[in-house]
Length: 414
Image 1 (spheres, rainbow, N blue to C red):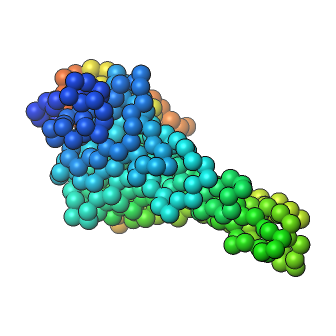
Image 2 (tube, rainbow, N blue to C red):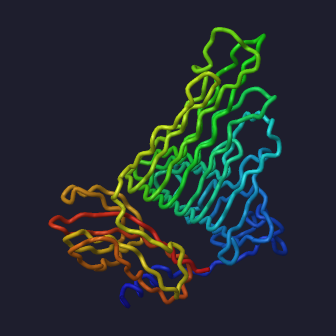
Image 3 (cartoon, rainbow, N blue to C red):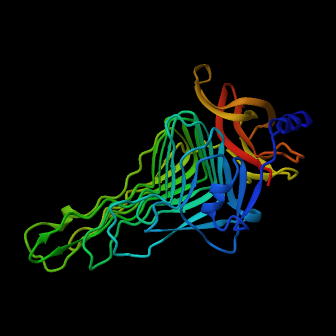
């Protein structure tokens, strides 16, 4: 274990970054602090006040709640976005312990633009990595989060919670819009999403009027998750689509059936590899005189595949922790610790490897009965000069050599 610890500390060697409290003299708000911060800085958000939208990140930075707490960014229907990341500068951008909350100032506003609360829109040629660690983002009318990243960008999302905005415009204003997606992620590079929940927004309603007749139909519910990422691994996640919009009568009594005008429920689109993912598609909307719209039963993708859990994925140097590893009923298990992600199908093993630059392989144990066991995560004495991302994957031998679940842990410098 001493050798492995030394290897990890060597991997973390770098020049310490500047830490900036927001607000502080010269940095009265998050927008100014992001603009002023040197690349590699850590911005800590004061927990006693909300921080307002509009910051544009275009360089390597960490933005986190101060002292390990959760920093709050407020985002309204008048803002173009809550927080935007437009470039990485070839480095690493981290959002840690951040909540972007939606404020609906004008419930009657019919928007022509539905920006996301968290907008990560990178050029296709951009390189670097993004870590969203315990980030919660709720859209006003649009998506909770939108991510567009090219092949040279690594995306890791851990312990997230993303909610699409509502498409409902309250009466007496007619109409509505499609419910917002919980998250829309288009990534052609490595992508690992762990222990996160995605909720689609409610579809907009429609009303019928006597002299006019049926108005355009109600709108679809939002997708919990749109995931176009062929190299993605989704681990222990819940995806819940929004319900479709409903039809409300006013005085129209013509022959058209309102049942044909209700909004369909949201339906997520997922790609990549699934490990214990639960999906609930949205229910269709309702209309008077029609059968109630019922959501289809939930279903599982990759049920029972998860065999590695990281109960504490945010670590500090000098703090001990454990991981939970499942051992096969009659076999042996190891855990590979690595410095990077790289998904590749291994034909001879009939399984996929997710880790790259493996530092060491550690034996966990064998069991006649199998099941999860608690195993010590390598202790890092520190101090570390920069955050250390560690990627793990199980390796099993039970007659065949098999590769299991990927996971991630970050040892933070602050």
